[in-house]
Image 1 (cartoon, rainbow, N blue to C red):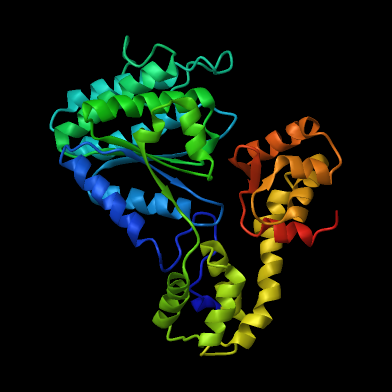
Image 2: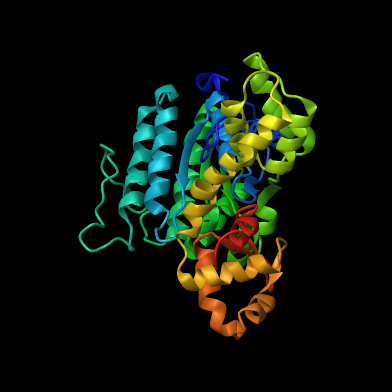
Length: 393
């Protein structure tokens, strides 16, 4: 098979050639866009799921959908060691720049940019000498609006003013936040408060976040009303029909077919996870002799695909862990693939649960495990337990 014509695309956040099995989520967001555009109340949206299920792909698709409706859009990726102030400022700057050419009152845009500049520059957490960061806005910073230094107050005022500009044009603004579970606790509280104010005022600005399965608990720990503030959508693996479609449709466009046995073998290997579907599909295509692609081709390709995943998908994460953290994960894997009790992990390691808390908390912070519910933990990466069981302890 010609590798140049290979249609499959395993990559971080890279849109697959066929976005299969996500029609429900796309329709949900279409409804959100339409309701906000008509001035009807609508909640912001949060996508949750394991690594490799396509959250970032959906987030980027949602962003494209909003842009097609001429909304202002901006996107950030949260980092656990940084405030979101500057990142949000840059994203909102991008959103307003998308709207500015169509606005009939340039002074309204300039007024907002002055508020945005004040918001960006008022960062009490910035290192000494860097607090006067300039976001590249050629208007004077406003005074008395979004510049208190309290992110909850400032973000609320910034969002309300941005929504007002969007209202002038009869459109909306969407802020997309990837890795939302990494937003610092104080910043999560500020985001929730700002979204709460918008939901009450009906301003056409929404926040669309994506994060790991424990993101809802992160939000609810910040504000009690967050459970009613967001529309939560869990993104899971593809069912059999969608997984097959993700493989068949791109191949058909290249004049290539799969046997039913090949599809059976690929579904068994990928287990319906979108990233794995693309990874196994790509290697199988490259090693297949011709069309139709057969189960023998899949069996030949599987070891190479697994080796690539072991290095790029699993190994890169495993390398980030300290020896103590690796011991903790190996103990988890030895118990099984379902969420495991922290007490069981301590028992396997013959340690007191309290002595293992630093390793557990560090793994959660690194995004390698998450707290499935109180007392239970699980891997954020599908099939990570299987990978660990194949590694030397």
